[in-house]
Length: 289
Image (cartoon, rainbow, N blue to C red):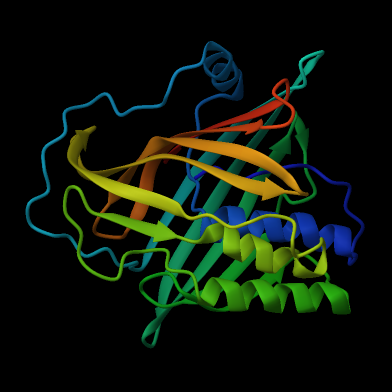
């Protein structure tokens, strides 16, 4: 799933800052985007069209695999190319970041420290560089507590943070049962986003829909045996009273030992039913390094 990402001028400690901060928290914790190619190549790929597909050999997973987060350290880069077409003109935007993540055991739970070593929006280093998200979760990724390091929140912002923590606590990021080829599981990440927006935008902003991963099988990449999942879904939702069709395509490569995504490539296309000349396309790519 690729997030609906947009820039907004931030004012320290204000609701505006909370808004973009929560988008970033969702981006990392709920959606788990990792890795990247260069932004210029992503823009070219986005302009050329096509659907991201894993081009390697896939073998079935017959013995079910249980996905659970485990202590680990990793770094990843992430890139998104964004294109907005209004019929009369078009605009492109891009986001790049380098993130360092550390997961540790704390009793029966896990702590996640996610630090933004670099965050670049349209070629400019963003103030979120150096920003850190800390979360306490169970092995499935259900969030119990969260704190933001490097940002100050006002009272309304703190309530918004509490709202997103409650929402993340009810969001399953990993399947409850072991999975094999053909199995699917859903992650209601947009319900988390809606909870986060309760204090910063009208709560009726959008109807909710689920991310869905389908297990395809095993693949071998650079000598590593990885689980391959795919996303292929079209839904119609409402944003600010308008019917919008959202199509998602892409694949994800998982290290089943740590339940971390090693690579993803995903495309989201949004079209407006009442404004057929308007469309938004977002292409994301990533690899752990």
